Amino acid sequence: MGLFKQIKLKASKMKDRIIQVVILFIGVVAFAQQDPHYTQYMYNMSVMNPAYAGSKDNLSMGLLYRKQWVEIEDAPTTGTLFWSRSSWQEM
Image (cartoon, rainbow, N blue to C red; front, side, top):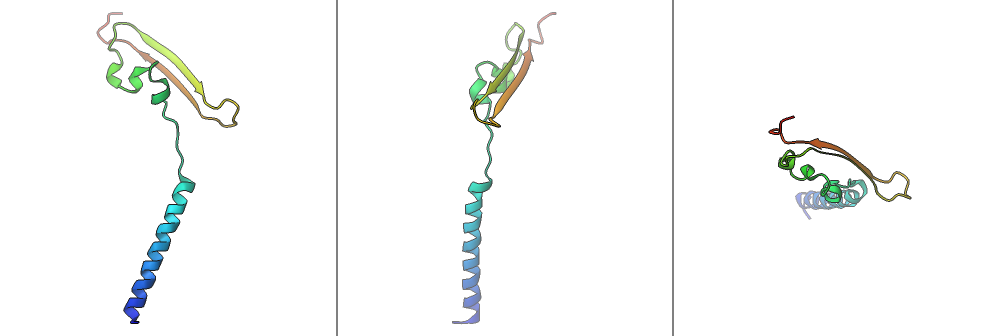
């Protein structure tokens, strides 16, 4: 076997090993957060669609709080404070 073939074979094996290690660590370092849009969107529609803010003729305000997995330490929590009114409405 020629020297060039040996180097090419070793490079191919090294490339395969690096890909395996990267794939292994993808699962270890992947983190995620819950998206509050899907759990509380019906109370604050402007989170999903900013054009919704001020679309009604009345004042809309609220404070939302959600704690997921109550008995688990360091469980995810979500807090939202919102206020909107029509810009055309006279005060």
